[in-house]
Image (cartoon, rainbow over all chains, first blue to last red; front, top):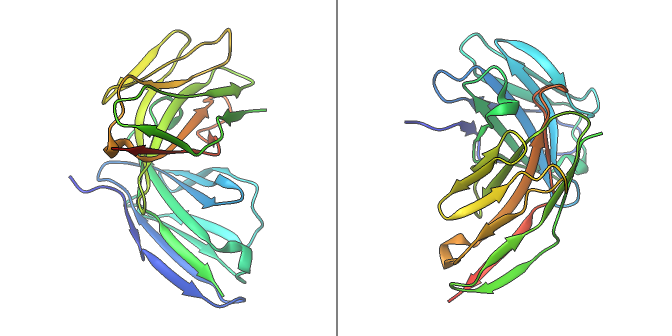
Length: 115
Length: 113
């Protein structure tokens, strides 16, 4: 059974550029969430999607955006990259419409480095 | 609001030692509690969970009991192995505030032979 697939695994971008990260959830999972992991801030919530609808958004600037497609795949975009955006971006999926009760399955993440 | 406070690391133990990683929480509603584990270069894996007070989650020899009276969810294992070396995260979710998870800062565990 395939897990949560995130692409690419590693990415190096220059300040001011934009980037798109992709996440393919486990087959049958319709809930997708994104988290940013940094040594200083730990794991911080970015977005949560269910059936193409954003249900919740974390406290990040508008440069961070995302979407979910009809096949449950999700993308997140960061525009005008800053050095502080360097992080591991984790995508997580759940079969349940209320993952709060069941937990998520996480992907291995995309390591973004902004130079 | 919702938050999780986790024992600072790093923790270094000898193989077969007893492990406790402390976790306490603050929540406005009725949270579910989780322990996740992260191995180097990988994402988080769900280790165990408990969804209501007095529930005990267990998996792979790890246990944690949801204690509402002390707002705690401490992780324990009776005999650690080298393969348990990883970073452990305590987390809570509150369905009344959406499906956002609140994570602790993580505790790094190294088990030496």
